[in-house]
Image (cartoon, rainbow, N blue to C red; front, side, top):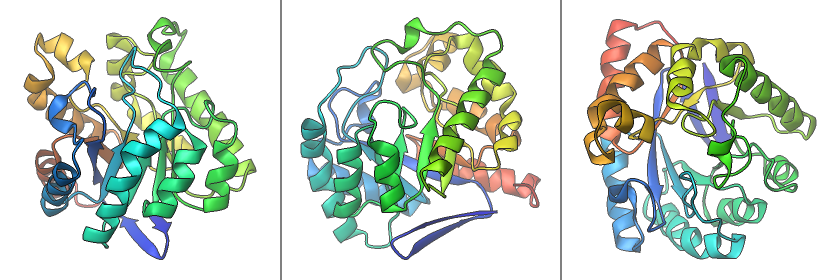
Length: 278
């Protein structure tokens, strides 16, 4: 059992939960997840919350392979207005800001967000760890090599599971040294990984239990599924749902998804099969 606490708000995680993806960017790899208009964002968020999402994860920067790197100011212009409105319209919602910019993280928390989801685990902005420590909010650290522009040039591992585990262990210690107490770990499916390495990580996800932190699994509609099934992101829901089920069996705590209802339904069935498992 874990709990995520922020601004007098608490999520008790005694069963797996769902994080719904809101992309405040026009260039996500899965266009239906893009909500560039405020009305779209609120509508999508309401649908996700009604379907059972525990967390809404909003980001203003695409991190697909080769995506353009926005400045903090550009990202702020995209995410702060919807976060302010989400916090106003859905005062009980638990909002996550998906960013590797410390300035964006701080201003998003001030605007109404409750946690930070950082694909770089603090390595792309030297101020991130001290900022999160000062804010005292939950923090997701993910494995990636380089940045989204270069990450797929860095996929050589002797043992991908051991090396990703070692990286996350080192970054967790770095976070704790800065005073960050609430940590979630993410093996970074699709980031600096080949198709085969993504499958290997999912097949061995239970190895990350040794870190004694909630494990976030983000594989929804990603390209390794599309390439394996010879489809596109629009046709990758069934594959995503199947792998979510495997991930749950292997110890995933948080599913980060485009399709909240399907993930919530899957967790309900999983809980029926394994009522005492987490």
